[in-house]
Length: 399
Figure (cartoon, rainbow, N blue to C red):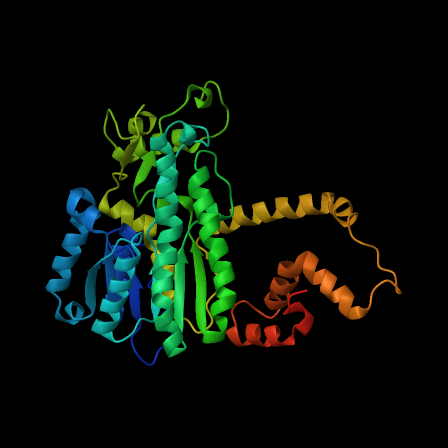
């Protein structure tokens, strides 16, 4: 092991064993996460199709500068150059998703792992985001990028995975998919939406031996490495009027500290009376340290024979989610008698077994179906398929 390892960064990931290099498709290669991961994968010997948002690449010099440096680095290394393909990709456009996937397959012959890692953040309370047509459009943009974008690229990739009876979809979200965060309501909503979509999708694609993993780093990993848009603040939610720890104030102070100047101005942009957008001014070393743990996790999980359905990155995130689950569990126990009070009492002569099963399915088909599958293991497609065949036939027909 090298003695030059930076103690602030995790050690190189333990890559799963493979008979051949993995072929990756990244939806956002211009982000700090995308650049660091591309570098790690190419160094390991994998192949990478790197999606680049044309508008971001052409019009945001600060955002694209590091990716251009990375491309120059690739050009200087012969063993990297042939294993990287850069494609124009706006995941909000279905046609671009389809053409980018087709180009990747034409170049490398296949795709093994799809990594959905592009997102944006909208800052504002529910009321602040409802003030005008402009702020309402921010909500639409949020879901177009964080929900419909991943849906588009996943749909474009699924036929490839089904045809070869193998594949791995990795979705990068955040622990905000577990926790509501004041001032980031629409960001949280988009995260919960895409995770619900993927939870259902995992069951549908399991028979094709396609795996799906959700990777959840701390909130700041995504928030501070992608575009932040802000709706104009309302006086009712100012610090002196509202004691809630709103994300606007927290991010504003954090951005000012990151800027590191005597009179920082970045954080003030989040308090503008106009809709504003910015990329956090992180230094290159700061970006690398911020995403290092997540890069480590994704590189190790991608293409694994038995990957986790969910992976929370970092001890802090694990503890936060544990506290949330503890709170939910305690509240569930507090009201369990009230919940059970609505159950229909069973009488031996009341229902024929088949009728009773049919009624149960009418009332709670999703609960019964999902839990039957989950008891097998969400990580073993063969077990899920077996569980599906073991379900009573009455659960599979309309009542």
